[in-house]
Image 1: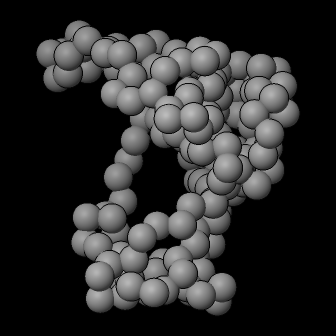
Image 2: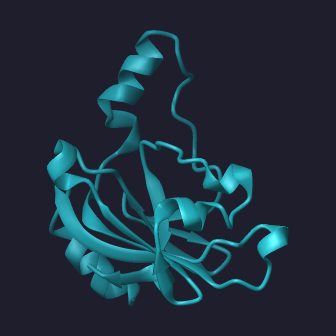
Amino acid sequence: MNIENILTTLNSVTGHHVSVVFQSEPTPSAANKGLALKKITSGAFRAGINYANLSTVKEGIENGERGEVEPLPWGEWVQFPYHIQHKGKDYVRLYPPTGGYIQTPKVQYFINEEEVDKDTFNSKLTPSAAKAKKKDCFTVSTDNIISI
């Protein structure tokens, strides 16, 4: 999707939820080389948040559970806190929804264009890639955004 269209939408929802559909195509494990894996995620995600202002981050710093917020580990801000660019590619920073079960994103899993369940999909990944990691924020390549 075009970064200008994405930013027009995101600029209007600072700190609020916005509906986003995006895909990823993870690399299968060596034993499953040749399979086309695709995951499509749709949901309401937060945008326009300063990571350093998250309550979990502030509390972690106060409690000595983490260090101060550091610069981006990769890429450069083009338009803080939305748009990151790295090696000529555009990314947007999103945050998980806050509304509990009702806002749980919907995820569809595909192997060679056939929809499968999560366990079947994860069995084709490396063990480290199959582990679900809860993140305070994440980036999505604009190339992978289907709609916003």
